[in-house]
Image 1 (cartoon, rainbow, N blue to C red):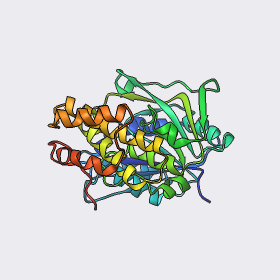
Image 2 (cartoon, one colour):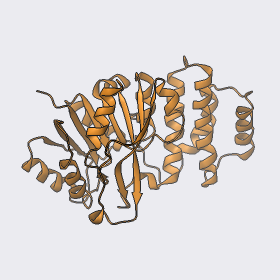
Image 3 (cartoon, one colour):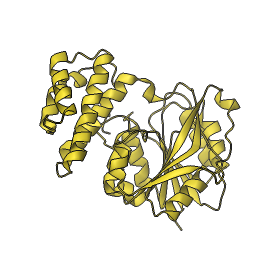
Image 4 (tube, rainbow, N blue to C red):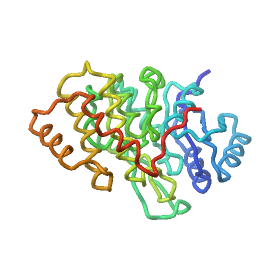
Length: 308
């Protein structure tokens, strides 16, 4: 019998946080059957040893090992291929889950026939060993969106606090495997195929500063955001003009922010493109974005996926 929920969790050098995260996972409430699929991305600390310890103690834990560090997008896709649950619980495993996080998210998915449910993360300065998370309870706000792509093209849905149907993930083809970090591509690609998304104003994880979040590299964020939206725009030219314009605008925004961080884009070319877009006279042709690609591709200290 397949479980209700599969936790699918890429791991890279999270040894200091894993015992605390896993304890919060084991403390999940409700009548929910689950499995846990950890995918180690060739950690150089003792993360794999810790994961194997979890698997030795619990038969619902599986650990997938690798020989090449490929990045979280590829590893998340790899883990989902091994998952069997009806739903996927997709979190960062250096955070602490609310004790009723999955129970509440699963309720929303079933109650509103939603194949995507998104929660909130709350940052803390407390050391992870001292973090406690209150139950969510039954009093929280949420909105149901019948145009998931329109919602995702808004703001604030890149935190890895997702419960999604496994069938949706498979229909979407998973994360963009050509972009290292999955945060932007996962909701974008899922939303294109989804029926409905619930955006819940509830804290499902507390986020201590463990120093292991890839999102701390701002230039990496701008690089990945540009290519996620550029790839999606190129793949979906059939979209309505308003959505194409939003996608194109996301790319230009990533370029502008990268320039502020020191990326050597030509100011005149960028400004003219941005102004034309803002007043609605610029084209939204993905080929027009090609001029920005060489700068992004030659930025130093950017991690790119390695196909195994």
